[in-house]
Length: 303
Image 1: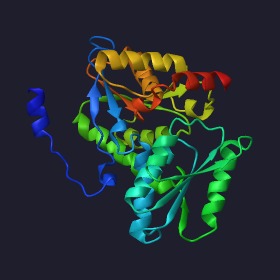
Image 2: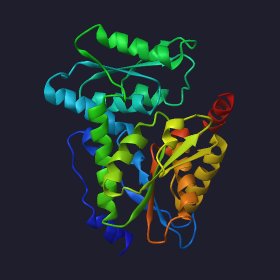
Image 3: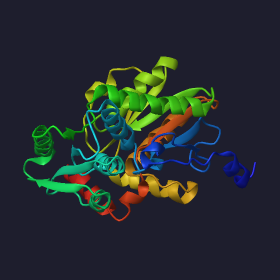
């Protein structure tokens, strides 16, 4: 089938709002990078979500549930802590739902995502550098408690977050059409994606190998408990080097977390059968890191 035929067979969605495009992100198979004859490696392209990251999934789930229940109405305000992918997601999703987004972040935060958040209309409230993210979280939650038309959004709303990641797991299984899934790889920071996706996928694949790619020196001893958990640590510099290789050879520009996931997938590729499939999650857009490599590598060394 030609690329033109493939494109014509895909339904081009027509939507009323950008939040309707959350989810159903594609899987792309690696052809030039990896072990010939090894397990097939696919990248789950979460940068195809509207704001460019998988954080759209749980942010949209929380806000849409709130509006469906009447607890959140147009004109209300949303507070988030941290100038990160979740802030970008809240700014965009909040904007299309008619909500006002306020981002609380330490004043020494990287400005890498500031323009994105601002373009979507979010307001930034700087907190002290000394207080770090903990103070930003406290300030955001405190601000939200001061009025009934404010909602503090984080990744700990268990039911909404669980359902958001369950949807992603279902997408993976549906896309593979019965192909044997040998491993699923995600990056680990808070561990939410790892926990929720592992739970869903292991219902159908009890011996599934769940891989956790860790950037830098983060310690996560609790993830070593399951005998099918695979953890690997990768430096920021190594992640950017693999990112560049993927871009040059596959035409796929991933972020450092996505590159770390692919790195672990390539390691497991040698250990799994040739008929098995490995899915590596790319959580966000590689474009948003271009030009910021030196700062991010320096920050990782400082930690």
